[in-house]
Amino acid sequence: KQEVTQIPAALSVPEGENLVLNCSFTDSAIYNLQWFRQDPGKGLTSLLLIQSSQREQTSGRLNASLDKSSGRSTLYIAASQPGDSATYLCAGDSGYALNFGKGTSLLVTP
Amino acid sequence: DTGVSQDPRHKITKRGQNVTFRCDPISEHNRLYWYRQTLGQGPEFLTYFQNEAQLEKSRLLSDRFSAERPKGSFSTLEIQRTEQGDSAMYLCASSLVGGPGEQFFGPGTRLTVL
Image 1 (cartoon, rainbow over the protein chains, first blue to last red):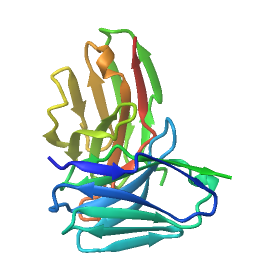
Image 2 (cartoon, helix red, strand yellow):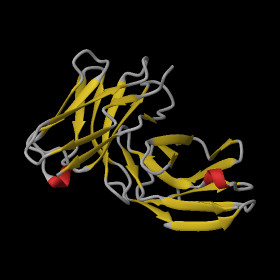
Image 3 (cartoon, one colour):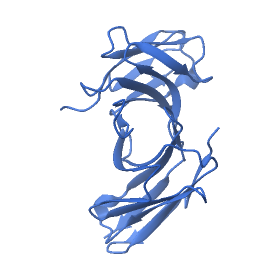
Image 4 (cartoon, each protein chain N blue to C red):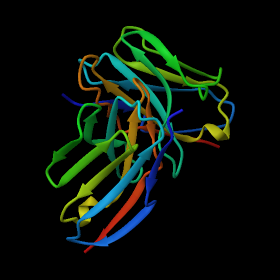
């Protein structure tokens, strides 16, 4: 079974900082790697999808990279804002099921 | 496109009762997934459908759980004889076969078993 680990578990930064969230997975034979945002008590919002043939994807202030050989993905958030405060989850796609990490809880302080 | 919807958003029930949740996927999506999330954990896969066929079930889906997607559109997840350990957020997602594989999630149904 695909094991997904996210580091750090929690992160607090002042507004305006650039930050990196890390995700590692045990099985390099993943199809896709997807990053999500989850606000407290809410569902998941898809942020970025990196297909297995791709190495990175960008959307606005977000950039995600994928290195299948090392089993790692990173989510880079530029110029963080208080509205970015949420839990960020990465998930590896086994072909149908997403295998999730426990998430990184991000707090951006004004 | 209204996204994935789930009903109800919250359900409180007593131990031993049966509950049923509904998920309406994005209209053109032919895959539908159910996940369960407990506090502080990432979602865990339960089952998925392609059109009306249930193709995979997790070992987490005990015989008290049953899911259907009778016409390949909406899906229901029923839990019989609920237990306190069933308390969780139940999430539904959908995707398009032949697309990039991105899964889109609904707002979830929060179940509390007293």
